[in-house]
Amino acid sequence: MANKDSAGKVSKNATKAKTSSKKTNVNSPKANKNKTNQRNIIVFGAHSDDFVLGAGGTIANYRKEKKNITCIVFSYGEMSHPWLKEKEVQKMREKEAQKASEVLGCKIIFFQLKEGNFMEGAMQQDIVKTILKIVKQKKPIKVFTHSSEDPHPDHKAVNTLTLQIYEELEDNLKPEVYVYSVWNPVEFKTKAPALIIDITETFKKKIEAFRKFKSQKVHTAYPIFIATYRAIKDGFRIRKRFAEKFFRIK
Image (cartoon, rainbow, N blue to C red; front, side, top):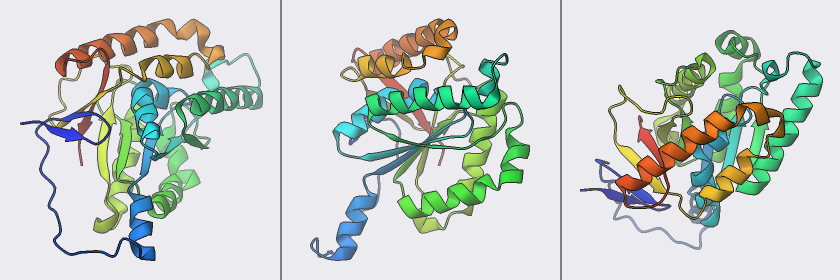
């Protein structure tokens, strides 16, 4: 039997959460703080547009529920325009990502890892330690990241880094971890509970946000095709027009 997610949506084969019988004073500072933490969600993306492609509709859904979404972008994606100066590309892609985030209603934190060399760069910049501080501060209830099945090496690296961060968290701070797909139209190896979120009302907003990446105009046709195909396919599974599917791995 499927469990429904608060935003959406259907979580198949999910384990039922244990409820506590201990009562809490809802007016106490501690209770209010915990309530605030329940609204925090983090989305990891290798490049400046991945959070939109992988989870744009879901981000917009959660914002409608007044949740706070922080998107952590590991790289600007300077290699998309090798004929331009690196700083110019960074500025351009950051501006595009900020416009996309405004459409979806999320906040962005950028890092400057070099494409194709994420793991070495992460060690040099001590990225895991820095993100651990962010996660401990925000105490998110959910984290979304790249699938290990994605063929892009940077996407695989972000999946690895996410799991490293998760393992270093104290047990009481560990969030639910979900993976999304960008370049892999289907999943063959991932065997985990699926979370399927109805994005019928926010799919147009997802596409609107992605179109803010004007510098990627030449490269947008295929990603939009995949995103649309996947949204229709996953929507069919829950009898909705559009949906986004994630797999819970932690």
